[in-house]
Amino acid sequence: MLALLVAQNIAFYVIAAMIVFGALRVVTCKNLVHAALWLVLVLAGVAAQYILLAAEFVAITQVLVYLGAIVVLFLFGIMLTRAKTGTDLDLDHDNSKRIGAAVVGVLLFALMGYALWDQYRDDEIGNLVVQRTAEVSDSIFSTYLLPFEVISVLLLAALIGAIVLARRD
Amino acid sequence: MLVNQFLFLGAILFCIGVYGVLARRNLVLVLMSIELILNAVNINLVAFGAMWHAADPANLSGQVFALFVIAVAAAEVGVGLALVLMIYRNRQSIDADDVDLLKG
Image (cartoon, rainbow over all chains, first blue to last red; front, side, top):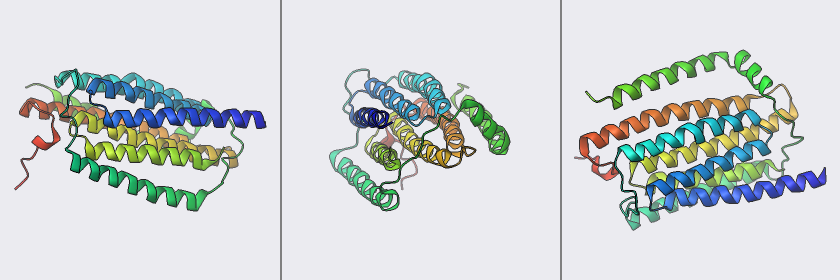
């Protein structure tokens, strides 16, 4: 049991370091296509964290929807707006605005970190049980049926809206 | 594992995303930073979901809400990229600073 816990912790920290490094590259990279590819690393790392949390269905959905669809959509967006494929120095605001953004980020992290530490300190997640796909679907189609229907209407509306906006007329 | 490990990972990812939204000028990169923020929120939801599930096996709300967030994120990216494309078509540029018609 202890060996498993140590292994889980090592896996968590390795994947977390990967996610943070990838995310920093996404927001600092000077090349649009590279930024999209670093985003793949971040999203895959998040899927791995879901596996660590024993949430298998969300992990698979993350891989299908984010890695499969959204990143491809981003690459299409990059190509359709005819961005420079090489290094592009026009991607960021000038230095003073970037420093302001960094200050906002650090302050926000300090605030959230204080609140989280104050509230949860050393709370354990507890005994991780695999959350089976069948149980998740039971929950969606009983307790959360109405939100599920609303989400499907929202997706339909977004689909039609995207077609109307992007159509050449 | 501590629940705070996951919450702090989510907080770090969220702040990096906020930095990206503020510091980037290219609209596609701003959308990518928003994806980072949404993923940070999802990590929190799934971590809390695992904690509740350990206490009460019938409670799967965390995962269900994470799935809803993923669905809304997909819709958001679709509409967002359509808007970016529209701006590019009208102004031949996707620089956030060029979209300033409302500025007095």
